[in-house]
Image (cartoon, rainbow, N blue to C red; front, top):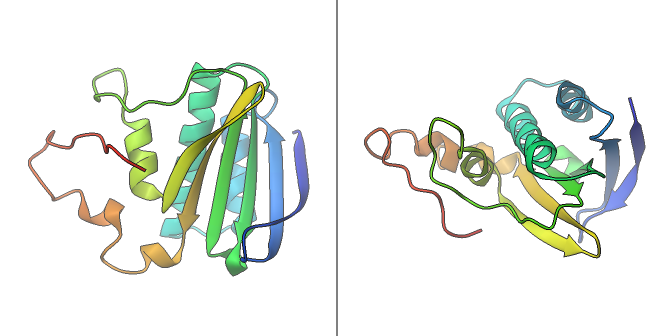
Length: 162
C-alpha cells in the first residue's frame, strides 16, 4: 500500500496527523481502513460518515477523474475535524445531478454528511475536499439525521450551494 504519513496545520486548529495515499495503487477498501485507523478505530457516527465521504470522493475520482489520483486525510482540533482531499488530473468539475437508477446520489451524500466541501483548481489538477466535524453530529440538528423524514420519498432535490 502506498501511504505517506506526516503533520499539517489548519488555520488556527493546530498541527495534527496526516495520511496520504495514491488512489491509482491503493484500493478504495484500503482507503476505508486508513480512515478508520486515523480516527482511532472507532465505529461512531463521525467515523462512519467520514468513511462514506472518503469512499464517495475516491470513487468519483476513480470513475470520472484521470491519473494521477491521490487522497490526503488530515485530522485537526484534537480529532474533532477530519479534512478529506481527493485530487485527480481531470479538468471536469464535480456536478450535482438528478438521482436515478444509475447514480447521482454521491454529492448529495457528501453535502449532507459534511460541515463543508468544495473544489480547488490547481495547475494541471483539481482537489475535491470535504470536512467532517464531530461536534456537528452531537445533537439532533445534524442535517443527515433530520433530512430522512423531511418530505415524501423521492422528494429530495439536490442542494444548490456549498
